[in-house]
Amino acid sequence: MSPSQPDGRLIDVLARAGLIENGFGVRFEALTGGVSSDIWKVTTPERSFCVKRALAKLRVAADWNAPVERNRYEVAWMRIAHGIVPGAVPEILFHDAVEMCCAMTYLSPDDHRLWKSELRDGRAAAADAAEVGRRLGRIHAATANNPQVAAQFPRHDIFHAIRLEPYLEATAVAHPDLREALFGLSRRTGATRLAMIHGDVSPKNILLGPAGPVFLDAECACIGDPAFDLAFCLNHLLLKCLWNPAARDGFFACFEAMTEAYLADVSWEPAAAIEQRAASLLPGLFLARVDGKSPVEYIRRDEDRDRVRRCARPLLAVPPSRLSDVLAAWEKELNA
Image (tube, rainbow, N blue to C red; front, side):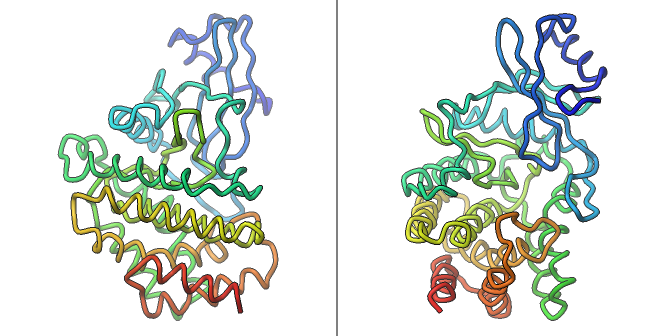
C-alpha cells in the first residue's frame, strides 16, 4: 500500500457508499499528524472529504494497542455533538462498522487554522480558549446523566487502553513512589461516568474556523468524567510555555479564560466539585507528557522535563483543589 493510497478494501467501501465512482477521477492524499488512524483527503470531481480508519497498533515508540471499535464511538460523539453545537464538529458523511472507518467533511486550512500551530507561533488568543471551554461545557451539560446518550457508549475499556493506562498508569513506572497517587487518579477517573467526553481535547485536534472552534478526532469518546476533557486541554496550555516561552503570558490567559468559560456552563454538579477533580488530575497528565507512553514531541531538553517533574510531583503528593493553584505552581517553577 502506498503511503498516499488506501488499500483496495477501503476503496471498495467508499465506492459502495457512493462517495467515489469506480475510482475514476479520484485523488487520495495522506494526511499527517495522527498516531492512531490512517487518514486521507479524498478529492473527486464533485467535492473533497476525509476518510479515517482506526489502527489496532498506534504509531508510537511504546507498545500501545487499542480496539479499532473506537471508530464507532468517535462517530457517535461527532453526531451527538453536532446536534448540541452545530458546526463544532465536521459532518459525518458515512460510517462502516466492519472496516471501522468513517468519512467526514473536509475543512480547508485556508479558513480553518489548527489551534496547535497558532499556539506554537505565539498567537494565543484568550477568546479562542474561552470559546473552546464554552463549547465543551455545553456538550458535557447536554449529555450529563442522559441514558439515551449513555446507551450509545457501552464500552469503557477503550478509554482505559488509550488514555488511562498509557498516561497515568505508565507514568508510575518512572515514578514508583507516586504509584498509588497515579493509579488512584486512574481508578477515580475510570469510575466517574457522568457525561459524554471526547477524551482527546488537544490543540492538535481543534480547528479555529470562521464560525468558531471545531473539534476533531474523538477516538477516545466514552461516558466518563468531564473533568478529564477540561484537564487534558488545560495541560497543553501549560506545556506550550516550554515550546514558546515568549508567549507564556498568552498561554496563562488562555488557561484562565478556558477555565472560567467552562465552569460557567457546569450544571450537572457543583462547579467546585468538577474543578477539584480537574485540578488534582492535571498534575498527573502534566507528568505523563514527559514520562508516560505519549510524551509531547516538542519537549526535548532534560532541563525542561525536569521542570515539569519539579512542578507536578509535589502537586500529586498534595493534590490541589483549584485549577489556579496548578497554574500558580507552574508559574513559580518557570520563574525560578
